[in-house]
Length: 436
Image 1 (cartoon, one colour):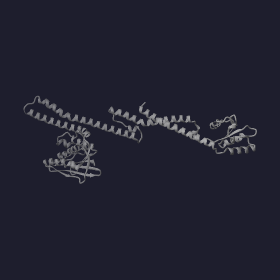
Image 2 (cartoon, helix red, strand yellow):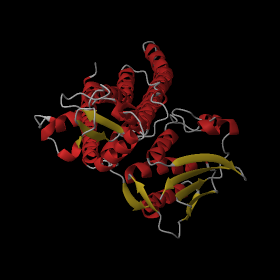
Image 3 (cartoon, helix red, strand yellow):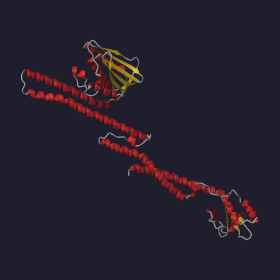
C-alpha cells in the first residue's frame, strides 16, 4: 500500500478518534452530572411525594398503582426496602445504589427520606429524574467510542484516498511521459475538483501537451533538415563522380558548381544551428523591460543604409508613447531584422518599406509593410514554417527558408504574435504584437 496513503490515513484516524473519544466522554460526564443534580434537587420534592402518597393511600389506591402512575408521567419513583429491593422488583438505577452504598442500613438514611406505612416495612422513597431523551444516551460510552472509532477510521480512509488518488494518477502519467507518451489527461481522472491538486493536474496536462508539441516540432525539423540536405548532397555526389572524368573548361564549371553547393549547405547548416540555439540561449538570457523604439533605432538606421544602397527607401514612424516591452533584446532584434531584410529583398527598386510602431490597447504593435508582389493567399499560413519558401521566393531568391521561422519562434518566446497579410496596392504587411 502507498506509504503516503497510510500516513495520511493513520494521522487523520488518530485525530478523528481522539476528538470523538473526548467528545463522548465529555458528553456522558455532562449527562451524569445533570442526573446527579436532578437527583439531589428533583422536580418533585420528597415532601410533595410523601403528601401525594398519603392522600392516594387514603383514597384506597395501592402502592403499586401509585408507583406506576408516576412512570406514565416519565418520573421514576422507587420504594426500596431495608434489604435493598424495590417494591415492584425493578432494577434500581446505579445512581441510587451509589447513594445508598454509604449507609449500612435503612435507619442510617436521612429520616426525611424514610416512608412508614401501616402494614408495610419502612421504605426509602427515591425519585429519579428521567434521562435526557437523546439518541446517544441509548448506548454506553464504550459502545459509542467503538462506533466512533470505526466511523472515524472509515472517514480517514475516504479522506486519505481523496488526497492521494490524484497524486497516484500524476505518478502514472509521469511514467507515461517518461516513456514518450504525452497524451495525458490527468485533470479528467481527478474529477471536478477545484483545489490545488486539481490545478496541479491541469498544469501537468499543459506541460505534457507542450512537450508533445516540442517533440513534434523537433521531429518535423529533423525531417525538414533531412529533406533539405538530401538534394544538395545528391548534387555533391554527382559532381564528385563527374570530377573524376572532367578536364579543362568542364572541370572549372564543376568546381564552380561544387563551391556553390557547399556554400548553400553552409548557409543551411548555419540557419539550422541558429534555430536550434534559440531555446538554449533563451534559458540563459533574462528578460528585461526596454523601450521598443529605442532598441530598434540602430537596426532601423542600418536597414535604411542597406535599402538606399539598392535604390529602395524605408520610412519609419516611431510611436509617440513610451512602449516598454519585456524582451531579450538580442533575440528580438534578430527576429525583426529577418523580417526587414526579407521586405528589402522583395520590394522592387524605387519603392519604399514602411515601418510603424503603435500602441493598441495593452499591445505594442510593429508593422513592416513592403511594396513587393505579396504572397499567394493559399501560402500565407505556411511562410513561417521552417524551410518553407513561397513560389515567388523560390523563383527569384536564394535561401533555406528559415529566417521567418526563426522570427516567429522568437516572437512567440516573448508571448507575442506575428501575422502576415497581403495589402492593396500589392505588397506584404507583417504585424508583430508584443505585450507592453
